[in-house]
Image (cartoon, rainbow, N blue to C red):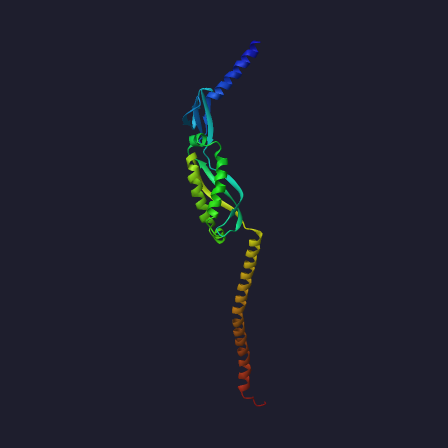
Length: 223
């Protein structure tokens, strides 16, 4: 009986110590609350807290992370429907804001990203969407960072992965590329014909020269 009581007390002591002693790595912070009110952001290192419900904490990871935005259907300025998917690379810079000011900032980022993408694409014609991918990445980054900054989250960069136009536009682009290749091949062939004719004429003149010289030489008298 005494052994069981001792084991129970030891278990309770371990639980209490675990709730009191926190070892926070360099890449994490603890957002600490006292009776439900925000008190401080603690870490890294050894942090001592009173057991709940007096003090409670939320662990926040400060390392960069990525959020994948699946294909979004958008309409360009010239009314072409395209699908785009991209990745957002973010980092928490203010741990307390990411906990207190938003419930689930990753989900919120996905929703804002879809709306922002439609606004950016809606200002560009289809040709610019393909030609100005880097500029689009930067515009998306700036606009998203303006929204997420209030949650203590910084958008480091945005990478568009794939742009898929409608099938009819893909077919038209394929026909245009094929026509351009045929045109370049025709130009190259047309430029090569005069050169070939010139080389052939030069070779013909060279082949005639020895015969003409031989014809002008007097015949040798018989021995």
